[in-house]
View 1: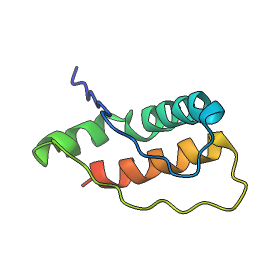
View 2: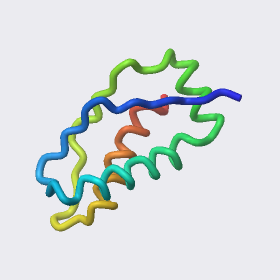
View 3: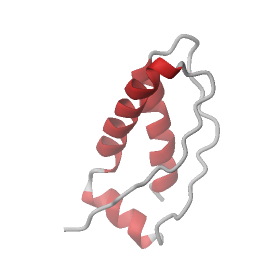
View 4: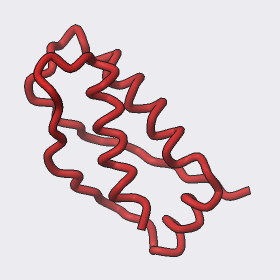
Length: 84
């Protein structure tokens, strides 16, 4: 079995309230797990040589987005960069 281990050392979330950090992180983790769970996604990532660093860039959200929406949107941005 091949595993993909993704470490996020730094995540900058401008405009997110400190009390929403945990909810954003949990949504981020859950969505990344969903997006990258398939063996095909792992194989594509490994065959592309991995990625020691990703810069996702700006993720746009609607005003008033809930913390879970923020986490999911950030995860989708990361998954776009990981999936070649």
